[in-house]
Image (cartoon, rainbow, N blue to C red):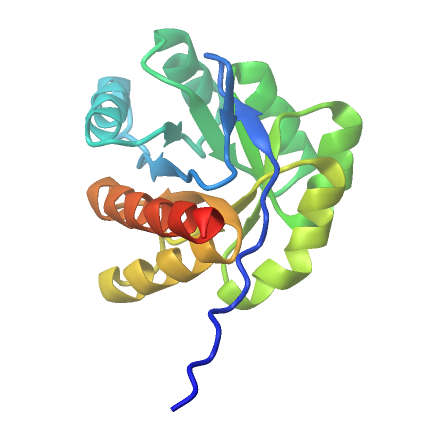
Length: 195
């Protein structure tokens, strides 16, 4: 019985600097923990949530909130901060507040590159990865996949597919699950590259 060859693995030649030097994303993925908004007047909750996410294995604290909250987390020095933005104005505000990385939709990638923002191109759907890859590659940006709104089992499967399809940052609400998926897929990608 003939055995079909495995699908090709996209070659990813991108690194991102989160403040402690460049991180090669050839096979490695990063978990961006989505930090929920604190209750009014309780910004201490935000710091506690960031510390918990980083302790659980997150590489980035995704503080996609108003700039003053992004700034408070960035100034705390707990770890690198990312922010998902929808507009150029929001991206500029997040960068000014101290975000190490802005997650931009594909239509903002040209602006992010022109402004010199450290950015990743983010998609919400597996079907959008192929269309977003040329944009990300053109600017040397990594691809990010947002699994934060998916049910747990669907997120697990979609994260694995996204990582094997070239996404190297996963936006998540379950850091431990995503960290395990990232590590398994990285081991598989390393083994495929060595073969």
